[in-house]
Image 1: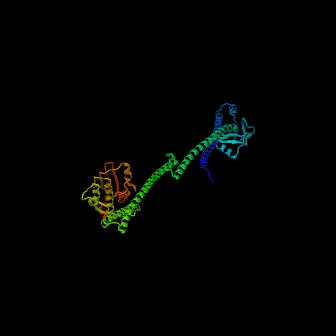
Image 2: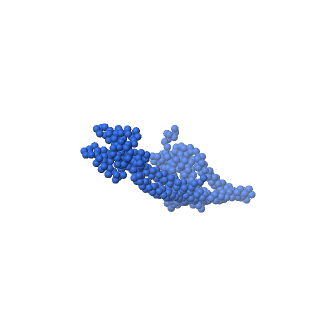
Image 3: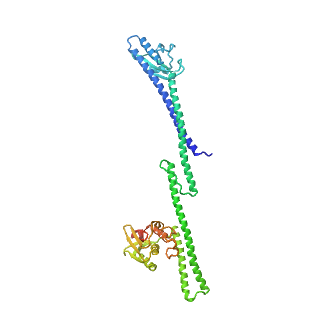
Length: 475
């Protein structure tokens, strides 16, 4: 059976408040009743002790004292009786029987000098009363006592009136509890429904939805966690959308790139087969086919490298390497490509510098970044710099090229990203995978890489690799 949260909340809140109010009301009623009867018995004790004291100190007749007290007590609806050691009534303002009816326990308590109080008595007297028995001693000899009685109707009237007030207060409290419970339940249910609608919106693909949050209670904290979740989902979806757009662009570029070299290679093969290419042009045609096949291989290798790195299938063979020699080898390999664009490569490094890294992968990092610098630099300078501090080996690759704006700097590490989309046939990094591979390889070396650049002012790539103790490596 399904019970709505509103009714569950309403019932729980109302039940707690109602039980609390009832317990307090019953406790208050019992307390008030006890107070009323205790005050009555205290009043009877006070008068009884006064009567006995005056009787002991009286030098004139006791009848006058007894009558005086009788008049006083009669105005307060209190009767009293004086009795001897045999429970025979000596003097009484109300009782008509010759004896005081006491049980064995009460009589024994009186003889031992104890005061007997009974809050409510219904059987031994003509009406229901509260009574007090006080012992009377002369020369330490028990000679009787005094009995004071007061009808409980007056006490009951006071208690009844107080109970009416308690009942009215309880009714008002219950009504207020119902209203308060309904209000609290409505507030909680609305907050839960708001979360439910937001969750349904997220399930429907809307990741921009947010709900008000607070630190007030668990629902507020849940709302905060929900907002954090949607923030991450929205960011992830934007990244996925961006990656998907780049993937589609990449596939379009790849299709174009594959079609062009394959068409060229096919044309060369058919031309040779049909003897449509002269002997003088055959070497040129074969060179063209070779260049186009290299471009296809480069595309396949870049993709395979990236996927291997992402799948943690790359095993690094780290060793101590001379850093200046690696940078000079990079400059030598790319000298021709740099010269074609009017660029000069300069190496600035000390012969004593070394780096602990995988040779092949570190060369791949240097070549990819340097190729990128050559691609976006014309008639400029690419500088390869090496230095170190106490904890790191630092390699900087700077160029005087076209530079990047901040938005491009954030995206250059993304897969398939190309700073100039229209360049689909440039000789270096044309598929937008080179710098993605570089960053993954630097991370595999437990290093960091960042770039600083301004539009029109070139770019500076900085690689920081941790230094490793040579002795520890040998061990």
